[in-house]
Image (cartoon, rainbow, N blue to C red; front, side):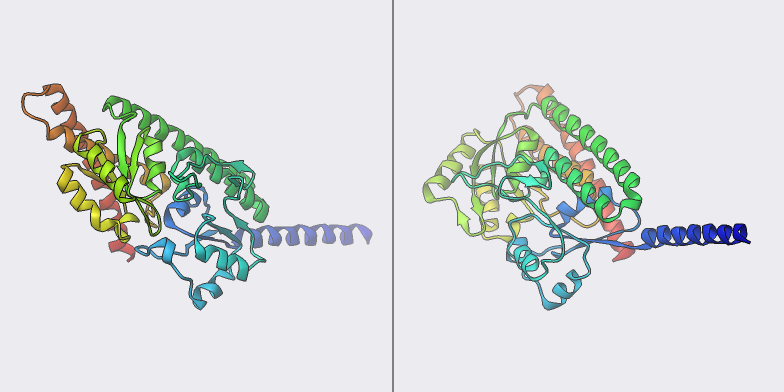
Amino acid sequence: MFKPILTLIIVLLAILSLVGVLEAQEHKVVIMVSVDSLAAIIRDLSIDNVEIVTLIPEGAEPHSYQVSPEIIEEARKADLFIFTGHLVFEKKLTDLLPEIPVLQIDEENYFGKYKLEILKLPDGRRNLHAYWLYPDNALAIAKAVVDKLIEIDPVNAEKYLRKLEEFKDRVRRIKQYITKIAEFYGVKNTSVIITFPGEQYVAYTMGFTVAGMLSKGEGVFASGVELSEIKSKLEKGYAKIIMASDVSRMLNVGKFIEDLSRETKTPIAYVKLIGSKDLTYSDLLMYNVGVIIGAFSSTALGKSATQNRVILSTAIYALIASLVIVIVVESYLLYIRSKYG
């Protein structure tokens, strides 16, 4: 009598345990992220039961974005916020929904328990614009995200850790590629002008020196003296390219970029800081490398015919390679949008 009852209890416990595991697997972990380029890191770490919601719509300027009551209601469903730590609307959401855990940079430059490398603006302030585009920072952020995912969803811990290892390997290979391509085309330690602080991290990744910054943040422009110095550096060829971005195009500084380029005969490399929901983190880095090498190549192609043919030949190959990278990424985005948009 006792043995059949014991067997039944064991079977029932096994069924309950299996139901619990299945429920845990079916539960969607909802992560709400500020911008697409930061979300790209989380996308590379995600498994099927993770839902990523980017709060800022594509094409919207992050620093002036305001959350609607509908967004606030939607945000209540989140299991985790992953924020930049410096956008106004992020603080509003964390104040309104203090029960939802938040991962973001703190005053000591930690993201979770991992220290980030944060660059300084000309006035000494921390540059908190697009710091995740520096690959070492992306790796630290990825580790912090996986720590949190395992805490929220321990059943899938092994899968998250596997995804993290894959992400580490991809970033390592891209870092090696960037180093090699910068050395091969002779652009390492080159001076550039940037138009918005977030571009500083893209320049830093490429090993460039920032010779001037047209905008130091939202509504903070270079002075007349600084603008004159920047123009002089471009005209004399001390700074080789102007690095602009999808963000600077949305701001007042965007009106000056094309004129400055024309007047100084300096090419522009338009990199992506915001990104796109269809780009992985690897795609984003490779796209930026492509447009930067393309800009440097156009400079080399503009040299006189009497200059070294090897330089010209190298520039042509660089331009072709960079165009291929950009065309592939843009074609992929168009395909995704036509299929799902």
